[in-house]
Length: 127
Image (cartoon, rainbow, N blue to C red; front, side, top):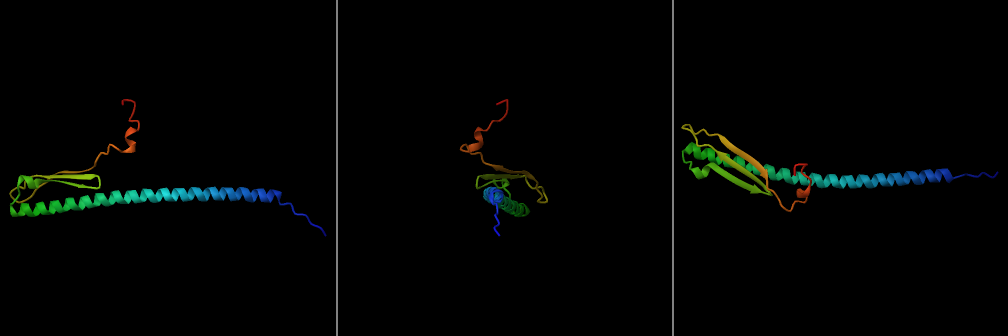
């Protein structure tokens, strides 16, 4: 008995499936790499901001100790802390008779970079 198998349609189907799977695998790899890069950037930014917050809290603790001792000067009332392109500006009020004070300014900003590639993005019709 002589049986003939026709592999034409099956072979074309398998080639198409292989091409689709290869394309999807490539896209998955590219997306995974982009997600990793963005996660690393976010981790660096978050780490820098948390370090600034910790240093700001230390400034408040130190100021609180000075206020409790009654040894506060005008120079002790403010601080500017910079780290990794971020700036934290802190200003506190003069302590009252009980050593209590208020935080007047707690401002965390990212420093502007003139070499930033996104400075040339269209800013709206008014620009």
